[in-house]
Image 1 (cartoon, rainbow, N blue to C red):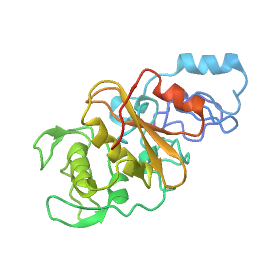
Image 2: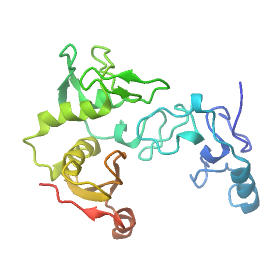
Image 3: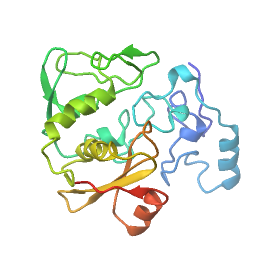
Length: 236
């Protein structure tokens, strides 16, 4: 089996490159515990690191650094668990939003569908819009996977159209509501949606075809850094 990570004592060198290795001490990426705080070793690892072959790169939908790791090597930014991204984190409160598969009408929860949203190496045709996609949503109750993520969002949004867009129970629900807000405006924009835990979710998008990112507003500095250069669009 080919190995890619050169960090010392790495237990999973086949699942990520050196830049994708997370240190067990400082939790930063790009080096291991043996190299931590030794800037020369960290720089050497960074300079020598090479992207993973395209056929084994991470296939999780919201990953922005898929060239540094495989799907097995992806770390969630919320819980640091593997094989899921922040919008699919199992630590989020239970989401009761129910949706129906457009092919067989089987009913399932949104979270179950989100956890099976992946990027494929080949494209398939969406059964709703008939456009090709490499990001199909798999409906776990019935096993159908011929729906693109955009159409999936539209399906869920129909069930949420009468909901208050300013409030969300989970980041996943806020993610979908933010897309409703962003549908009205183009360009680099952001919006904020309140949660039930006295937090505020901030969502931003660089352009119409770009993925939606988010942070929890725990500090003014982090919010300012996240929204700097983006135009505010109010959720109504």
